[in-house]
Image (tube, rainbow, N blue to C red; front, top):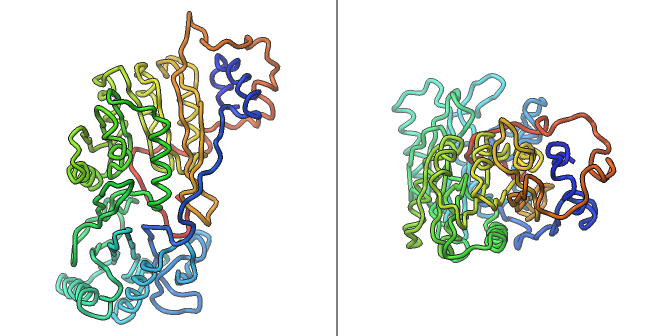
Amino acid sequence: REIGNNNRALLPWLFLQKQKFNKLCCPVEGVKASPLQTEYRNKCEFLIGIGVNQEDKTVGCRLGKYKGGTCAVVEPFDTIHIPAIAKKVVKAFQDYIRSTPYSVYSPETYEGHWKQLTVRTSRRGHIMAIAYFNPQKLSKEELADLKISLAKYFTEGMGKSSGVTSLYFVEEGQRKSPNLEDLPLEHVAGDKYIYEELLGLKFRISPHAFFQVNTQAAEVLYTAIGEWAQLSQESTVLDICCGTGTIGISLAKRVKKVIGIELCQEAVQDAKANAQINELNNIEFYCGKAEDIVPSLMNGLAPQNLITIVDPPRAGLHSKVILALRRAEHLKKLIYVSCNPRAAMNNFVDLCRAPSNRVKGASFRPVRAMAVDLFPQTRHCELLIFFERVEYANGSSAAAAPAASEIPAAACGTEGMDGTSPASEGSQAAAGHGDCSPGEGS
């Protein structure tokens, strides 16, 4: 409906598509299942608070939203999507903080210290733990002693059996930024990184770097991307919001060149290291906001065999990125990976809307869609949409179709208009990735 409302030149094509695909604008290939249905999350963020029965210093999941008045935290041991090895770390860490004189941080009074525990795991058996602590008015000496104590607990003490291979400590006072990625990390024990294997490739993962939370389902997703992209040895892949480089690296041996763009500096460092680890020399990575890099970069890319893959955070790509992709008319194929299609609706509409003074370049149209169940046991999934550039002949759609004037309004998707705009469904965001708490899906 939104495509037809914003690009009437596509109405004939939409009419035929809806006839072919049961009132849908493109074929939807269903939902690909995750090979692993339980204990699949390789990254979990646990809050620290007072338990439901007033247990002190409980590590786990908040029962509701803080703004809804719920601050109680419940242990995660009965959940089915969190791995047993992560739960073991939670138990060990909870035992440790209960032995310290420091209280939990209160979001109501802004008092207290212990705030959060992040656990990252891999199929190689690596475990990274990141402890978030508000120092309040503690002295440097007191903080130093706490870090030494925490490190000894996990390397020599009762916490050693939890298997933590990498330990970090974050002093988190009143945030100047809402992003955890902006907080300084201190490595206190073990290795600096964990490593994961995906599609026969090896990947280094830093504390803040994005990596899909379900590794085995990510293999299903990336395999589908590779099949859809129709690549050759002459292809160039532009990987926007590339994280640690997983998508581009998984395709690199099949193409001439891969270019990755990512906001998180840690992730870019990992991506470069991952290219070296996998002995790939046809990849280059740029660190920065996609809206700052893409416009100038597109002008220098070869016009033949170019495909763009975007895997943005929940809110989607910045509108400037979409406008740059529209202007680059030598770009004919685009694959959009979305963990929140409703929030990304602005992007979908802008890719397809009619050219104008603001939106230059021929529009795209969706020709294929599929979902991958990256988050079993939740209502969320990852959506994959293949867009192709509309080819015009003499200023009209090249596809043979009835004229727009011959199509009934209902068939054009204008029925049931509620007067709302897709802009109301979600906000734009700069490139870069976030994560979610264990109970969320994306």
